[in-house]
Image (tube, rainbow, N blue to C red; front, side):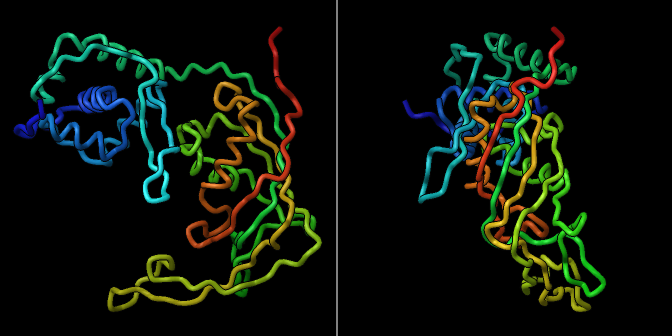
Length: 296
């Protein structure tokens, strides 16, 4: 029988929304944001895409959801969720309010509460391994800091271009969701500076900037447009760095694949990342230490 849309029910708390999202995903089996919203709307619930994203991310951080990007629509990867645990026999109901209030869902509510408390304790016991990585680059990896002439340059040490720890950290944070890891787990990865090896000189190019990208506002409120000169890393340069990774976060057997996904599908690297076309390419990965520390 086709389900009927009922009067809209507004969730009274984040916990209620999480219950609704969990049940929608379990009912659908393998659900996109659009499908979750459609299912909850059909049950009479009211939820936005931003709220679905937040609930799903909270649930995933607590190990209850997995995310898959293999489904494509029109050549574009679509994010879909599936339950990793908590399989319940959910009663057939007419509206989301009945689901939220149903006593048979108490085990689900208890598990959600338990996982939230566990996450808040912040108890972590990681086994770190050390990986040395060599990247090369394609596109325009831009500099970060303007010189006296206003040209945005790369950082240098001993006449060599270097990337700081936070450059890699920011790039990792932006792309961790691509490998089904929370951006909030970035603090568990330890980064080192990166050294650039190249026998070519950097080039300075002109980048057109719109009013939004420039950050300036004109007197009429429309903003300004113009050209910014930026120093770019020579294509084909070698970037050497290392990462200390918890094997519980990314297993060493999957680390190379994780980097390949992030470099292929992820955001650009370098200064002005929103304007940059610069991409990293994995050249070489070596696990130099399987375990950094052992209490044995």
